[in-house]
Image (cartoon, rainbow, N blue to C red; front, side, top):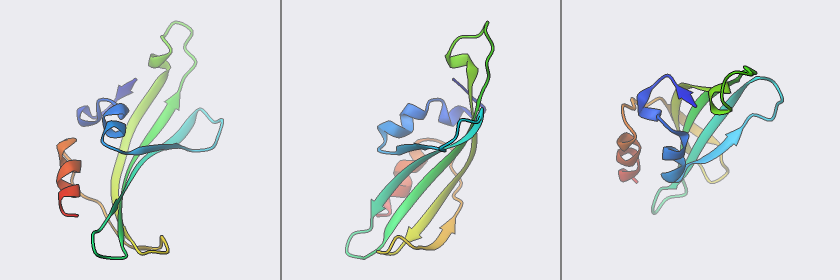
Length: 109
């Protein structure tokens, strides 16, 4: 597995932090991968959704290993404030420089 940004060296790091993976439902060799985590905001009817997006490109190189045929490219991080009907109230694109920044986001809630 190759990533173009060191801070996301392994998707498993985010899964270990409580993110859930969702893959685009397609058989195309290029597809979107989302890692999402929902945080309840104490004492309110709102939730905070953190979404990390990757683009997965699958190649078919017979001389490469299985993992080398999967190339994950980091795309973006977005955060949504949602109401109790799961409607997005607003979206922000935070500056994320390390996996620890995800912990810092959660500390607000």
